[in-house]
View (spheres, rainbow, N blue to C red):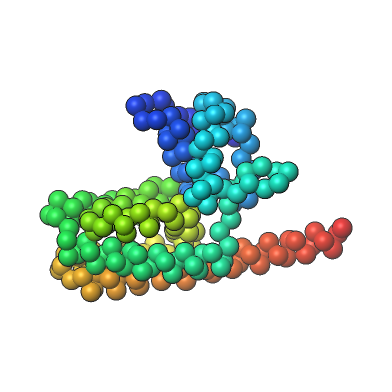
Length: 238
């Protein structure tokens, strides 16, 4: 681990929160890949912070399901299984569909302008190959959508699984040819919101998540088959 771009610049926000956000972003964007060991000493050097700050952040990451503590190995980046992915997408579809409906019905003019700006950023960034920028742009769009829903309980429910949603979003965005379909689906969401049509916004959000789920399931299933094949080979050589 030698990537200096992850070093924490100490500002007014609590240091623990800064460390947590840096590590969370590295995990959800797959800079730290599923199954990768997170060695405390290396993280301290990478981030330029104390072990106490790293340990506190790691506890928070574990509570979000982004890392797992493995006996005799320590913390590793969590792997979202196919079954877990299916469950997360089922919940995400309903919650984001509700967010779309509420935004269409409740959002202020300023919030609608912000959503348009976020979508324009997505269209621009999707012309570029940078996966992290694409992920950040989509995260901004959905943060705006949730804020405009005006429902704190809904936001809290999605926040609880947001880390794993972002990991799965990165998975679906990595699929070749997915970007044009994504833009088409999101165009429908924005159009429904512009029309103040809550039902259409619900359906557009639901369709978008289900489409992303189908792609992510293909990728996760292929990954699981590869892991199973590698495990069988390992046992055969033993």
